[in-house]
Every structure is written in C-alpha cells, then in structure tokens.
Image 1 (cartoon, helix red, strand yellow):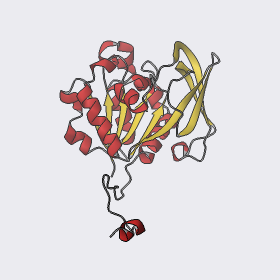
Image 2 (cartoon, one colour; image 1 turned 180 degrees about the vertical axis):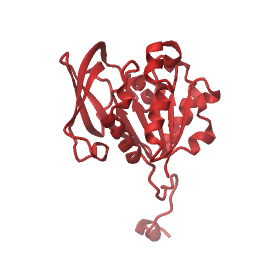
Image 3 (cartoon, rainbow, N blue to C red; image 1 turned 120 degrees about the vertical axis):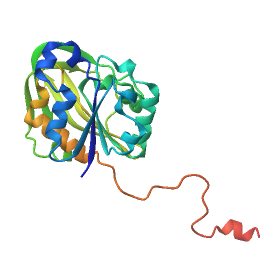
Amino acid sequence: MMNVTVWNENRHEQQNPVVREIYPKGIHGAIASFLEDAFNVRTATLDEPEHGLTQEVLDGTDVLIWWGHLAHGEVSDEVVERVKQRVLDGMGLIVLHSGHFSKIFKTLMGTSCDLKWREADEKERIWIVDPSHPIADGIGESIELEKEEMYGEHFDIPAPDQLVMVSWFEGGEIFRSGCTYQRGNGKIFYFRPGHETYPTYYHQDVQKVIANAVKWAAPVNRNRPVYGNAQPLETIKAKEEAK
C-alpha cells in the first residue's frame, strides 16, 4: 500500500475558532481521514521537530501533500531542500490552495507563483478541461463549490505540463486550478480549492480529485539512468582507425 504524508502548517486551526470548528482535527486530519482507507497515511505539521519531515519520514513517503499559508517563511530552507531532493528522486508532491506560495512550490517552479485573490463567499465552478486525465477519473464535467476564496489570473507559474482543470468564479475571474508538472523523477500536482474558512475538504469531488492525484503522483519503479562519463555502446570507427 502506498505511503502518503499529509503536511499542514496547522496555524489557522490554533488561532482562528472558525477554522477550528470546521476542521477540529486540523486540515491535515481531515485530508488524512478520507485517504486512510486506500493508503498508509501519516501527518506532519510545522511545529514538530524538523517540521515532521525528517529524512527518515521523507524516505518512507511515496506522495507528500502540502498545505500552508500563514507561515511559509518559517519553513526551514534545509527541510525545503530535503523535500526538493526527494521530489527529484521520485516522490510525488501535491500542493493545495495557498501552498502555491510555499517555499517548496516556488523553488520547484522557479517563478513567483503570485496571483490575484479575494474573499467574498463566492461560487467557484471548476471545469474539467482534460477529462481523460487520471486525476479527473470519476469526476463529471465540473465541480461546484458554493463558497470559496477567489484566485485569479495571471497566475505566475510555468506553463503546466498538463492543464487538467480551470476555475470560474462568480465575480468573473478564471484560474488554472489543476496543473501537473514533472521535475526530475517526481510528479507534481497543484490543486487550487481549500480556503481554511470553508468546508471544502469535505466535498466528495474534491476528495476524489486528491485521492486520484495521489495515485497519479506515485513513484515509478524503473532503472535509473547512470550519469557522467560513459563508455561507447558500439565501436567508434574513428578511434579504431587512429590506432
């Protein structure tokens, strides 16, 4: 069974009673609860030693899910580099909502990852623009969320390898809300919804997308290439003639 680590900075839940009421076990606990029937799931939070992401934990993680907002700057550069190296080595990474501004996502994207935003209790409709993609498996033409925070273009990210979903908001904006990337041997999925003051992670289709993304981002078992100076596979004619 695949090993999944759900990471959450866990600050809103401590500071905001509204968030604590919606997610009494934390956002990480809510996400872990709907994944635990299909995967081996553990959680980690910012205030644990090494943010709960020791080398041992990461080496035992097939897919890492990341939620952060208030405390991006408190995540140590050492841990960010550790996560980056695991992604390059094949660990899957799913970045949720305000994790777009996390150190790890910005490092892997190489851009500012900035965007427009607004909190106005408005409807979000997430359109599935690549219905054949495994992450969209079992999802209809769109996902409708009654209330969400708006994220709007321009979203300063590299062009996605695959654009799976696009959001429309009641105020008129659109947003690339389901984006895949490959970095080294690892797969990355950015999924937009999940503002902390809305019960988004209890929505059945949102849960289905995250579970699908975990399966999609799983490491691939294969022989890794050997880098550096290489001996020829065939006889090089010019070298033979020079003898």
